[in-house]
Length: 464
Ligand code: ADP
Image 1: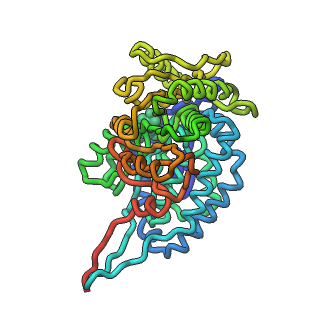
Image 2 (image 1 turned 30 degrees about the vertical axis):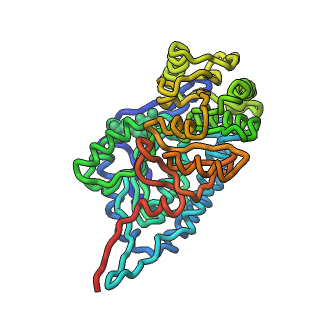
Image 3 (image 1 turned 45 degrees about the horizontal axis):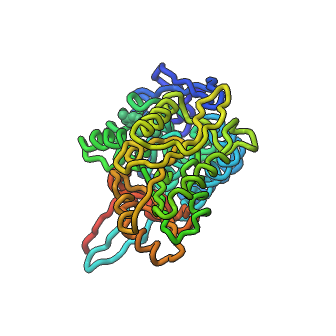
């Protein structure tokens, strides 16, 4: 693929560099994408600016019809999307179908039916919500389509126009999305695609004066950098960053279920999930039993080819990520943790890491504090509910978490004390209409549902 999508058509890039895209299960190069340079980004922002006023002026229902057409065009490509993400991310096909494809299709359907809030009257003022303008959206590789749709669906429903820079490690679903955008006939310039790396393409977008708002999902380090760049011109930023979420298992919980669901959550997408419950906190009376159950559960996550029906755990995204994760496992053991799980045999090729359950993890150690982004679970013990809350909150992150208890009121009490953007009680289902985002260094703002749409709105007071 050697095209960008600007102003409603596929465009030849001016930038001459390109990036190879790999299949992490085979290490093979499967495609190349162009690196859009500053002038490509300028073309895309100019197109989005030109499209903004007419798009913002459309009645929300008319924007909704465009989004519904896009949703249909995307749905007809569902099989292709799932296979593509299984290839460039390495997500096992079943999960790529259900989570990587089904979830964003559902989220887009929701945004096609959603309008910005109605104006309200306060005294002599009419308070209206208006679209924030041109949005620069920068997304990561772990849930490549979902993270794009969470931004693009909400921004378009709000009346904003968008320039998207998808992650260079897994950009292929974004290209399919723009084929669907082209087929659905969205007005030219409403959504534009600039592929490329962070430094050239990403920074050009963040620095561009025509971008009113930057919506970013990725690492906390890059989020901090983007925040600083955007601050120079007081551009709005929304940030979805890292996490180190705690799964608190109280002594009266159904231990078998809590551990099983907890391990599956930590290992989803090979642990490359920002909300992953990577710290399992278990009451000391049941700690040894929990460690054993967790090691057993991890052994059931068969590593292998993402296209193989039996595979439950794919590779990591890159050789670099594999090295980083192995480094974390080694350092944790040097810091006193014990590897409780038995390493699995690895395929000959591919950036695979065997799932690792580590016990006796010090809550202040690197493994308990740093985001690993790999199939690694740290199991820790606590004395009582206060101690569990203290350990859960002993983190610079605050994205997600879980509580398990036979007593829902007790679980609610612990949940309310956890400084995180979300808490799931007793394995409750993920709700794609609920606000999603972080406290502390996990981010600023919320995505999904009506809160996600509101993120892309300004507020105006008109006095009469
Ligand atoms: P990850 O560790 O998930 O790759 P990053 O935060 O580095 O996390 O990447 C997320 C997205 O941010 C990618 O699309 C990447 O290209 C982009 N990015 C990385 N560095 C920058 C930067 N300096 N400016 C803008 N975007 C960046």
